[in-house]
Length: 182
Image 1 (cartoon, rainbow, N blue to C red):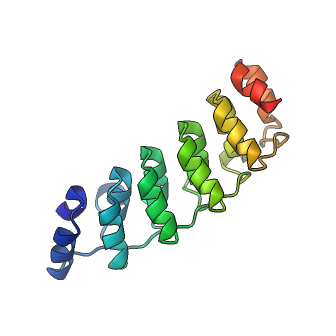
Image 2 (image 1 turned 180 degrees about the horizontal axis):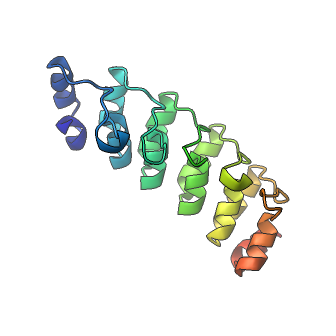
């Protein structure tokens, strides 16, 4: 939908009134809402939601929801709009990825804070039994480690293989994360 690409609600409305399907997904299961979220087009997000786009639809490749797409792209205002629209913050993708887990590994501090302030589960398990804290440790992101710990992340959590975030920091030489873990 060209209106989504241009962030033009007027074009989106005309396309839908002309018969375009707001729920239609293109290649890879990418629909209008995913595209708007990925590009950070808040006006387009609000418009397609108003026409009934499925807020938590998962694309075919990774099972990302529009919220996950916005997080992966670092689009804070799109994340804010999707949360305001009622997005399921803790919905997991096909491989267990969550919005908070993506924010943690990508160093999206403001987005992680926003997700946490809106009730994201700081210890939600992803594939392999890891939590977002493991991702922050793996990236040696002390600020993200501190943020997650500040929201109650369990520093003693064990992944399916028995490794803790502290073990991961030691094994990987992630000194900044190890220091932040205390």
